[in-house]
Length: 407
Image (cartoon, rainbow, N blue to C red):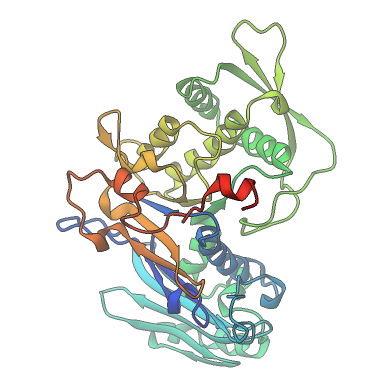
């Protein structure tokens, strides 16, 4: 599970603001909340926050030169481009809490560190300053591998990324968390047909039960689809969108052509003939079910894109209920859907400690803060107060008619 994440460079995200996902309400024994929603005006920095997390994943999983990936530097300050950016994440991996972080400039890793808390006491796994490495007592059994690592390491590659080729025991739980647990997705993009076909086709092929689960969720969403036909095809693969995926590039695995049988329709529908909401729902279903099955952390940018508010609320509810989320999966998403702040069908969709806001300060830097900072009463109308500006993170709108008339 993701417990916290913070990033920053020279006044970016208000001097390393932190996304705290540990329960804020008294009496909650869970290590982290199962859902976190991030609200804010357009261009407030919500997606940049998720991009920072993606940047970490790209650096860990691909051994790419860090400078080749945009870090989302604070461009409103002339000094910021020359300063290192800091990324820190706190996770629960394989039963142990870890803190992992690094500072990187455009062409080099300035610092990198990993700490473990097996018994609530901090233990150094490794610390790095430039090309110098120091390993803690927990790593004493791997001295020979670490000696070789010190000779191999380059200044623009993260130490943690070497776990893909070396079995670096104490580092592996954190590497596996990035590799197997963290899943990041975004709204529909230009290559969505290839991606949806790949996700749905591979999902159906993987387990015979998945066909029933997929059709049940399509029926529950009332999109009119009664059956899905997935045909494997041999054609060159397209490309996935790259902005929010830890492993950008060609769609992996076989390609699939999808067709959909509707009630009273005399011929199947192709994917491009379905509504944008149906395509996004199809795109989310395999990812959501995999996250629930594997206990993954699912990050979704603009989760409500083309989805009805009631459908989004039901999706959030899958992660809130122990019955449908027995493995401790997490859902973290950005949204503009204020109806999730109220009660849907008589129940609260989001708890008070699951709501976060992003707003820009006077310097144009993004600040992240929780709803609990305002000590909201349990019976207050959070949606109405948010739209009224009580919590900030809403656009300050001028007179549209005057703007159209050019006055």
